[in-house]
Image (cartoon, rainbow, N blue to C red; front, side, top):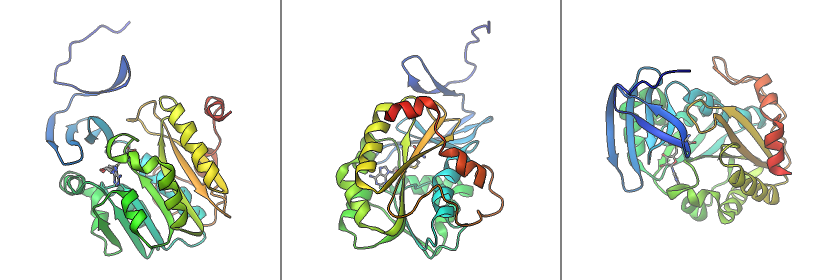
Length: 279
Ligand code: SAM
């Protein structure tokens, strides 16, 4: 039985359950201010490196961001026959764009609602945000739902790398938004959205997946472990028409730390408790 040791340093806690969660004992708080959309915090830790929190929720840590960013990107990019034009909604840290630029894409539009997140990421996470300087990347500061509603552009891939469906992200999990996604995707396009924890957000996941399943010919879910996220197991929901994301159509880029084609296949093999969510 481990003895209760009083915390030596101030702690930052994210509650995942009523009496359960994740804590950090930061060696320093590098940034802690509110923007017009949310409260932005950057902390320095020995074990997890630097960590970005929005409204007190972990967006990523340097320790495990590669897990999330590789898995929101490579399955759809390796499966799509020829992705040239990609839309990323959210993702102001640049991690998803970094992975996309490992492919011969022609154009990436990043629609991030909060310009402050981009500035903070450039200042404190250069390894992740440097990709945003690429001439292939156009950055638009807008609500992703509003951008899509007013846009005439067609994309091969639309990735929603947003925060959880509360506050500014709520508009990205609605039926209207999914309809707009459908009308802006090319014929064999992929829509991929982060969709939360099957352990802590089962109800949301079922409703959201059923919405995507109603709208698209194909709807799929795949999972990835992310240490600093609630319940560790995180989900992505995919919508597509006339193309199956489980089919691998190209070799992934070299040098990836998590993703490979075996992981691609296994990520779609759901454990029983997740299958139960959709029964
Ligand atoms: N990986 C993280 C997660 O799963 O929680 C997401 C990281 S990324 C930093 C999330 C970004 O989505 C934030 O920068 C936030 O400002 C942005 N965002 C939230 N709602 C948005 C919206 N409606 N349109 C565009 N960007 C949005």
